[in-house]
Amino acid sequence: MAPGRPGGRTPIKTADPVLRALFVKAEQLGVTSEEIAVRIDRTPRTISNWKRGLNTPTMFEAHIFAQAIGCSVVVTEAANGGMVSKQS
Image 1 (spheres, rainbow, N blue to C red):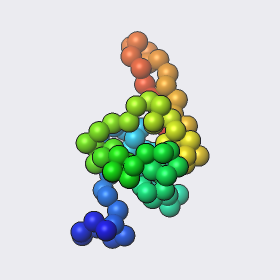
Image 2 (image 1 turned 90 degrees about the vertical axis):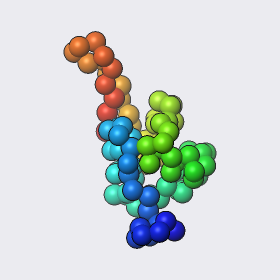
Image 3 (image 1 turned 60 degrees about the horizontal axis):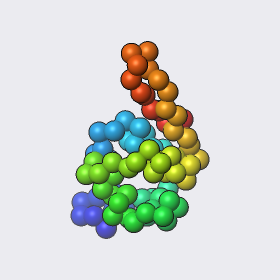
């Protein structure tokens, strides 16, 4: 367990809004980081690093993370020609 955190939860520190939304949704569903790691065949350390903003998953990893918690990530072209991704 992480010191000072109820239940050993790592705080969500990632600046990525899509990744943040996925972690919030996972918490709402009661899915732990360890369960996410097993479901998407990544190590718990990898998931923790994503959650803490130390690393960012690839688009594929974000996609399988979303699927693992019953969500999807949709990437669309923004009006200004840039790309926008969102969690649904």
